[in-house]
Image 1 (cartoon, rainbow, N blue to C red):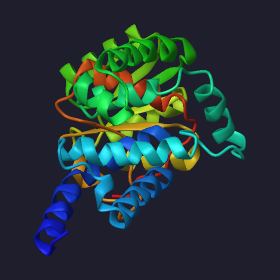
Image 2: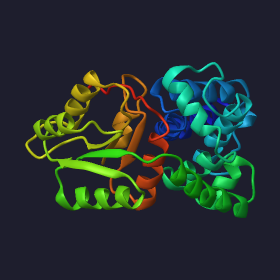
Image 3: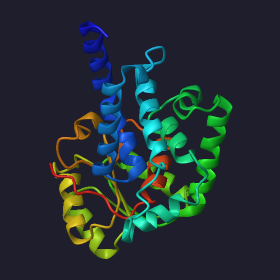
Image 4: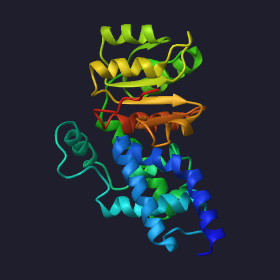
Amino acid sequence: MSTSQSSDLTSVIGSNLPFLRRYARALTGSQEKGDNYAAATLEAILSDFDSFDRSIPAKVALFRVFQMIWNSTGGALADDAAGLAAKAQKHLGRLTRDTREALLLHTIEEMSFEEVGTVLDVSEDEARSLVDIAYVEMAKSINGKVMIIEDEAIIAMDLESIVGEMGHQVTGIAKTETEALALYEQQAPDLILSDIQLADLSSGVDAVNKILGDNSDIPVIFITAFPERLLTGESPEPAFLIAKPYTEEQVRSAVSQAMFFSSTETLQA
């Protein structure tokens, strides 16, 4: 490969790397584990440029290399996982193979069923079927209590409706950091959905950090209009992330994925 071709490849991979991190983190429920998989993907491409198929869209090609590595390691958490990770592993073991991957690729990463099939090495119809199965299986797996930290009333009501229809109980809606901490004291949730910037210029990140300082076992999904800023891999960042504007499918998928994991890293801002 020529220098110019190598430079071009580096550019297209770099522009899609934040989204690979998002996908990997959601699969593993962990920034550290997800980013390690993303790094392994880059190493695989550097050792074999032909593994990156330039005849298909760059994002699809990058995710396809990742998927090969993911599959080669068993496509789940470590077999020797203990404690909270073991609980997550138990839930994952009940699901049909490739269903979570298909759901994330189609909803969070917004790939077509054809592209999902290319990444997972299945047909377009099989990819569509995997997503349908994922919704059914994950809906049956876990239900719990959800706290919403969001200052925009319409968005908050929309999120409340979506998670409620999924069978989860909403403990309440907080518009500020102070309200979020008070709401947490009233009832600890099983999951937190949080915006980054709140009404009184307080921070959803700060509120979540304080809550996790008291109970680090609560998974958190952050909602932001600038997801790339929280997917650099350079500092503690969220394992679960939804970009604004979001779709109902994206929220449903992220909530289902996060409910499988009982812990999340604290995000420092």
